[in-house]
Amino acid sequence: MTAANPPRIVFLCVANSARSQMAEGLARQILGNAAEVSSAGSEPSRVHPHAIEALAEIGIDISWHESTCVDEIDPEKIDLVVTLCAEEACPVLPGRVRRLHWPIDDPAPPANDETLGADELRKRFREARDQIRTRIEILKGLLSLPEGPASEEFHASIRVRDLPASVRFYAWLLDTWPKEWTHRYATFVRPDLKVNFVLVVHDGLELHHDTLYHLGIAVADRDAVIAAYHRALAFDGATIEKPPRTTWRGTPLHELWLEDPDGNLIEIYARLTDEERAEKPADEAPLFLVPGTE
Image (cartoon, rainbow, N blue to C red; front, top):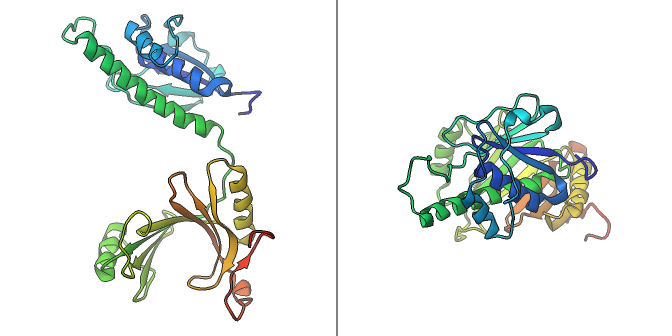
């Protein structure tokens, strides 16, 4: 979808009274012009006063909303359906549309249940509101997601204190022997899962957030690593830790290192061809792949 043709999203629950109404109000504020938003229910009733109050607390007015029947929604005019029912049977909107299910407990008690006081009701509506808000904030980032690297494999490595014991455990867990092992590492490969998993000795390091592991994805070749670098420069959610380069020590790779929003390191790599391995310099100095990044 483009800014000129934003996705059309409908939020559904049974009564279109609480969860879907709050979702509609939250989405209008959070997504803005990035989406066209509506809500509906299979048994529409009224907008719950506590739903209005819960959103008013964060500056959103849904007092003008009205409950709508799902039968009034034209599925041909919808791109994404989000159902929010937890234990109830959710409304169904037919058609070939993308669907998400966010099971949120109904904050409104049954009509004949008078055991909940006003404070408890407010608490339940606030909890539902906040759960929905975070999910919509995640959705906002996904709606504007640019094309990423064409990954061919997921790589993860962790440091371990006892290599033989850890190899035995992960061989059992992954249901396969390691592809290879030395006195310093063991590599597990599961082509069916596109997983490359490595155990590395800890080298006396204290194992914590910064030393325990790293993650990575494999791409096709040198050019794909360089392309990933340019994609990362244009993407507002990635930080370049190390620019693309060819390294020879250890496992020869073309590699690019990124940081995720929490500072975790992500390696984007491509294995060298035999011809590229033959070009290894005598001093094994890394070769930077993009001019000006040395």
